[in-house]
Length: 348
Ligand code: SAM
Image (cartoon, rainbow, N blue to C red; front, top):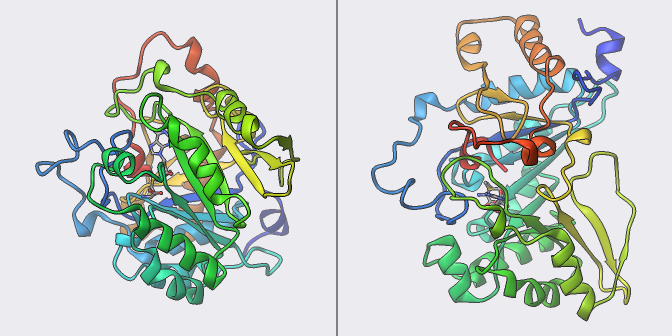
C-alpha cells in the first residue's frame, strides 16, 4: 500500500531538490561516433559493449520507473547510446506510458535520439505513447556533420526524422546542438535560420566535460552568451520565462515571431540547484548526477527477488542522500577525476 504522502509529495534530497525526472539509458551502443561523446579511438572495434544479459529488461526498467514515480518522478526520458537501436523499443514505451502517478495522471515519456532511425519509427513510437522527441543535430553542413559524428550518415536523414516526428505529433520537437569551438560554431546561424518559423525549438548546449574520453578543455566551450550574441545580431531575441522550475534550457524568443530557442549553459551558468534528475544506466545502476563516478546497483537486488518496498527503499536512499552539484563546483576543482561515467552509458 502506498501512503497518501508517498503519492503526492516528491522526495527531497539533502539540498531540498525534489525527485521529478528519471532518465533511462536503454543501450550503451550508438550508430554514430560523435567525437565529443563516443570518440572512435575509444569506442572503436575493440570496445566491449554490455552483453544482452547485462541490460535491464523492459519489465525491469518499468518496475524501477513505477517505483520512482511513487517517489515523485513525473517525467521519463529515454536515452542512450542511441535509444532507437534497442530492439522493440516501442514495447518499452508502451509499458512506461501505461504508468500513472498517484492522482491517476499519465507520466510524460520523452526520448532523446540522434534521429537517424526516426523517420521509420516516429509513427509506431507515437502510437506506443511517446509524448515527444528531442533530436540531436550539430550541423547542417554535410561535411561538418559527418566529421563531428564520424560517420557517413547524411544530414537529410536526420532532417527526415525531425519532419516525421513533427508530422505524427511528437512535438514540440526540440533539436539539441552541442557547440564546440573551432568545430561547428559556424553552424549556429545556419541552424537558427533553418529551424525558425518551423515550430521547432533549437537548443544550443555548451560542450561539457562529461566522462573522461572526449578530451574536454574549457577553451573548446563556446559560451551560451556568445551563442546568443551571434543569433541576436541577425535575429533580435527576447528572454522568455521558464516553463517550470528546473528547466535546463534558458528560453529566448525571436522578436519577429519566428519561434523560440534555448541555451543550456551547463558550464558557464550551472543549474545544479534546480536539478531534479535521477539517472538509470543501461545495466541498472542509479546515478544522482551526470558527472558521478559511482552508481547504486539495482539489477542484482532486482534479480535476487527483492520486494517493491525494498527496491523503493533503495531508490529513496539514493535520492535522499544526494548532495551532488558538480557543475557548480567544477571551477573550484583542481584536478579532473580519474573515473567518471560516460554520457553514452548514462544517457544525455
Ligand atoms: N544518441 C542520442 C542522441 O544523439 O541524442 C542520445 C544520447 S546522447 C549521449 C544525448 C545528448 O547528449 C545529445 O544531444 C548529445 O549531443 C549530448 N552530449 C553528448 N556528449 C556531450 C558533451 N560532452 N557535452 C554536451 N552534450 C553532450
